[in-house]
Length: 327
Image (cartoon, rainbow, N blue to C red; front, side, top):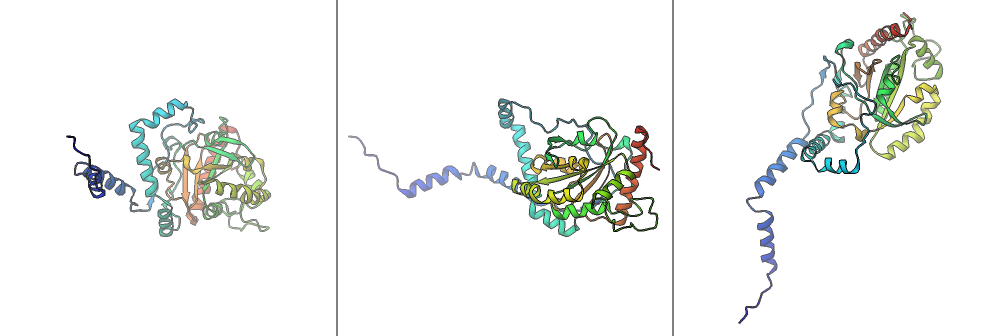
């Protein structure tokens, strides 16, 4: 006689699932992985430090760095690779640990001054390279622009750059203050104040041309970062019009770059001391793409003084090679 098969009760099913999914053999490993992730994504203690060593990357960048030329098959293979998976996990943990709330906490704690600027600029032979980024576009409707090409003037090596990097209006305003016209930025003023209401080199075409006259080998490179397309649209639709109204110089607009923040991973940010997404950053990059000086946040007088000493030093350095001297 055959035995009838009884249907398991709902309580039995629940017990079976519990034993299967939460057995003692699985629980320690699961909890260990979860604990490790929580530990790695917890915000770290922040300490503001003075920059005393060159920052950047030791390897010389290429204008194609950041462009993905892999086939679909290769991208799929790389995606499934275990080492790459662990690296993605590590990067995601770092991103979570430096989230927007953490950025706000650090900004309030430091006022945007997340590091103390070097007291003088780095020697060329000891300086490190600024990494190459591929910007979506510029304000002259250019597309897919390499920052390395911008810094080296596409290999001409006759320009050095003051680079402003910002995501927010706060950061943009901070970095603009470094361009105030004063006795440090314009040697002809000495102890006098700027005349005719000219307070900042970026306030008009006339003041910008004055800057180019004072420093013929200098170019200004602006990099505005966005993390979603709505912010990009807002900038292109409204903020860019105000920028063009103030300074319509073609070189200035060509070097005003719009860059997606997601293409800059945490290790790259750390290599250039990009430690907070709210504040603004200033980098002085020489004609070979090396970082010679850097600053952040609302400038102190010593920051402005050192910045323009660096600019004057690099004008002599680069101008000597291109037979352009002003001092």
